[in-house]
Length: 340
Image 1: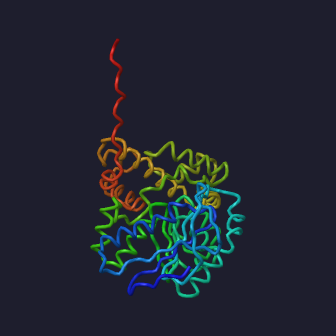
Image 2: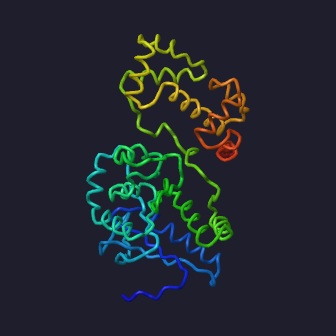
Image 3: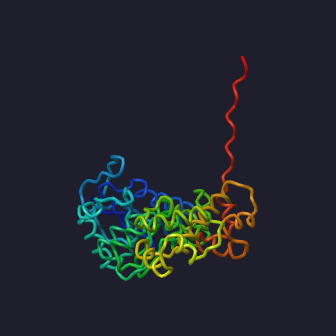
């Protein structure tokens, strides 16, 4: 099929489809770019988007069959994510089966194309060698695995979108819209991006995925010793942190406690305690009307300012702002049946 002539100034975007990729991520960016083009108007340079693949046929997630075109020269190549369970043992085999896609990504980058991954599409970029000595992000749920598989990458699990020398990585699922809006902002201007976000009901002011992290979903690290220490800390969130007393409770020296805990978990007991305190505070901010000062005290901080600074460092938002964004409305009681 002959390719239609391009329009001066339009941005050529290719979305790389491959077996098992998330169909919604294949179409999410093109759909938002279509909205942006309508907002910008017919006289403005738009977006020329194609679903491309090194394969002739592609079946995406849910059995969706995709109409794909051969790989061609584009300005931006978008790599969607795929289903990945935490700790999946078959990830290596899955990536090995996508060798044609990794080769295509590598070739596009070598030709000067800007390459973008969505969610765990970052693993494909790593397979292609694009993340070595670059800053990158992915879903917070899988950031640890990406760092293990690609130790040369500087993985930033708190970031929504990271761009480093022509390679962009975006965090989990909905971060594809954060990336797309940034692309619109750079190509069509801030007004078009802002209006597109409002038309699509997309938040265009997010800066971090930290507020969405749920540590309970992350794999628990450590052996029986560190697990017992973490359990003790979790059960005493309001107590003053006393390293000597903690070590004595487990019959070891402070030096031994720090060495063993760090070796098994990769962080200190205090870091674990702070994370647990913030997790509890997040729950209380979301579900209760208790004041920030009362919540701070309940998790061991008698100075609300100290607590607020720690909370912001972990979540990217001050406690009051977090509550405003994530407060859960109480469920309405079920209607009662009238008496017979």
